[in-house]
Image (cartoon, rainbow, N blue to C red; front, side, top):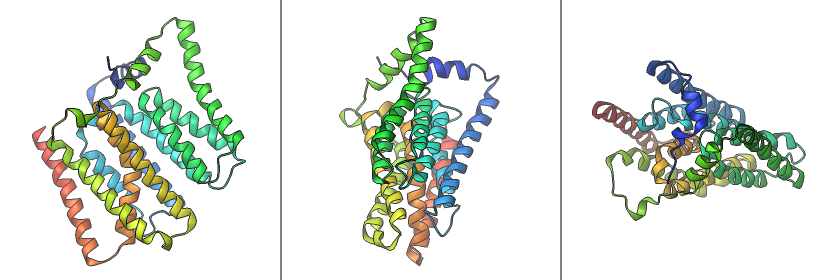
Length: 294
């Protein structure tokens, strides 16, 4: 039987500390604002989007705001903090195979995120691939990354042994071992429109990158390429775990916001500007519609 992430003992313990619903909404909004700030910081530091540098945070807010299933607060809200911090560490590890401390930090960030949202463990191989593409993966680095995973999960398992309480490992396993493939039984729902809009925007950006990729520096091309693979990886998980679609979409919004912002800042003409206004208007319309009908 599938275990929902919000039913994990770790999440139940955290959510039990909140006094009322208003506090839950404030914390949830603050966490998404923090994620948007980290995304903006990543873009500012590595200059992926050169023109309108505030666009990544703007698109992230718009994408998340149309996904009302994640409000007021869900496990992925916390996991996104670890994911964006790991992404920042990954981009900083460019051509630094001897800086094994960053590989340890990446594993710890993703492992801590997995304690409240188990599907985060599926992104660990993606980050190993990213380190390989960035020339920062070495044998020592890979062993250090595994050590980071063992540090977090080993501590949790030792705690379970001490308390003689194995609910967390069992719930963790159930959440990962019960896929739900939507193509086998699902029918189209209106609330999928915003998600399809994001996917279409990423496809347009990927086509644009394939045609104009040589115009960027090598590092920028590698960053954009990894973000494209990141979106594809998240979309694959979306097709396997339909029950967790709102949470996986929130993860997909992190790389998608940077990619879409890059397209609208790099491609400057009247048609692109009109497309940009249309997309913003459409996303705001979806948000207002879902707020009105919810």
